[in-house]
Image 1: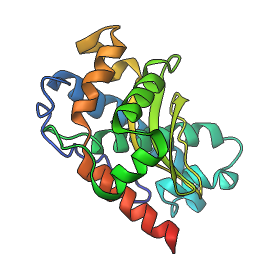
Image 2: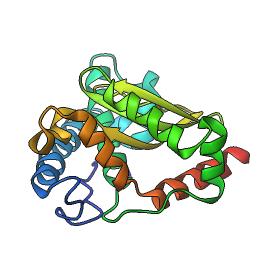
Image 3: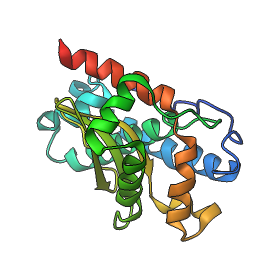
Length: 209
């Protein structure tokens, strides 16, 4: 995926995540907020042909190649595109089974249990000050949890996100108002563990080569 970046459709219907996330939120979040980041990123890159062959990951990892006068704007908007695409992709319209096989083993090794993982990721999301995300990362072959502000992306040549929860107010306020903790707790029912597990296996395989 390179310039011009396209607005990816949701991988499910707008009403598919009821009652945890309602249709109004998903229309607003996907069609307004996410779409705006895509359009702004394309508008920025239009002026820099030398960046137009870079993928989204490359724009975020190789920031030394970004022009100083546009670096912050490109990082912010590329981050907004990346973060939203992962957020929408790592949810599903039905209650998925808990992770199994190698991902389950990795979670147990890193956090002690799936319940402890749940507690630590929820804490990272709830306690993120202001807008941002909480993440499950694969870092140097090991799983870690991290929270970041705004549209920052914890990605590098050795760190790759597996899933993220968006705690910007626009992700939940229309349904939950200021009850971020309720939104976070309900969001755990939406994790698409098939997607996250496949992503983990692909990245772990690449890291082993």
